[in-house]
Image (tube, rainbow, N blue to C red; front, side, top):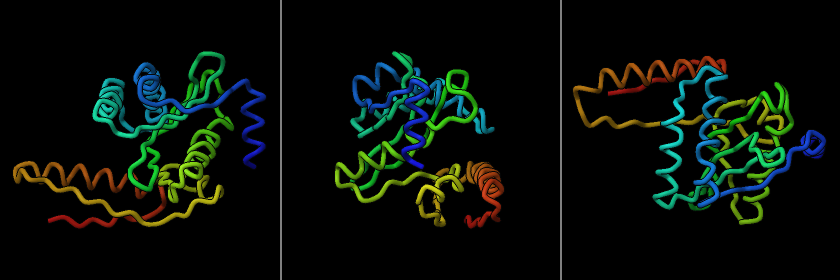
Amino acid sequence: RRNLDRQAAVDAGVTFDRIEKDELANNAARVAELTMMNRQRYGASARFEHNETVLRQLLSEGVDVRCWVGRRGDEIVGVCLGFRKHDRIYIKSVGFDYTALGERSSVYFVLMFDLPVADAYAEGVRQVEFGMGSHEAKIVRGCESRNISSAFIMTDPELRPEVAGLLEEYSAQRASMFGAEPVLAHS
């Protein structure tokens, strides 16, 4: 399947590479735009300014941010954004120009799986964390699905009820996407 995805992307005129540091900073607006469009497409809230600001801040702080890109000519038409921390690569977001690529594109798997895994292998990294989205497609590609727990510490007691409500809403949305019941524990 991997070779079919790659060949379909090549046939569509898409080439792939990884950008980081200065080149990523120079393309931060396009990366933010594509990831925002992808989040909005699937009903998640996203603001262009927020995405770009966070990306630029991570870069300015020296975080090992990676961005695998798909290009058609000089235009970036797909991105996969992640970072390396110690012995893991964490994939955080993807984004696509659906006008340029169409609704169903093999570019997704090349960017989201093949390139990060190839880089991890080349660097001796033993784990790539892909996150929760598109879990069924990820399982077909060899990913292992497992439960994830999160903790959020709110030091301002006045904000705790508001934050707890937002976290419960978010948990319920994520759980419904995966056909599960949210497990909530807060104090």
